[in-house]
Amino acid sequence: MRITSVRTLVVGNPWKNWVYVLLDTSEGITGLGEATAGLMTKPVVSAVEELAHLCLDKDPRDVHQLWDDLYKATFLTHSPAQLHAMAGIEFACWDITGKSLGVPVWRLLGGRVRDRVRIYANGWYTGPRTPEGFARRAREVVAM
Image 1 (cartoon, one colour):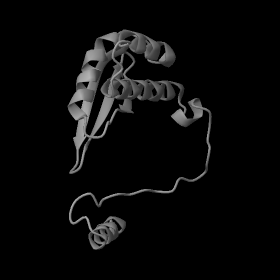
Image 2 (cartoon, rainbow, N blue to C red):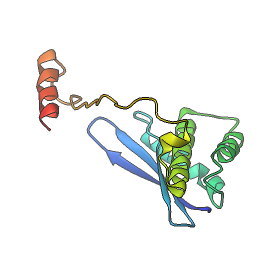
Image 3 (cartoon, rainbow, N blue to C red):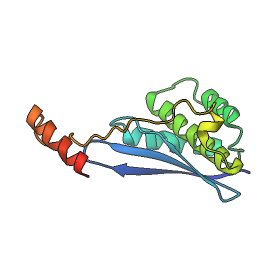
Image 4 (tube, rainbow, N blue to C red):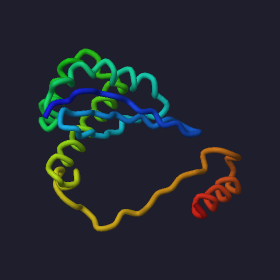
């Protein structure tokens, strides 16, 4: 299996963008990784684009080798944008590895830690930034 393309997908929302990395493979598996870095959308997208050629034709299941190659190629800078881009690429490689083996990524990374995860929903970044405004927006999120 080889990486055939590296793409980014930016999903906007009112307070920041989410940046995703998609790695396509020769076997038709696409891996998804997140590379969001707060308000640094364009620097992260650019960093992914700069690193893309180093990923092509590599086996995404060799996660640590690919990370090491990217790290060594960028050894003079290691900016936050580059590190977020590398993390997104790494997560996408783990996603591909899990899909190719038919196991969830949590199994690859050492197994289950807890049976339940408390949900965190946040929708109060817009509107009045007062206790009353936060409470109103929180009620709207719960209703959704």
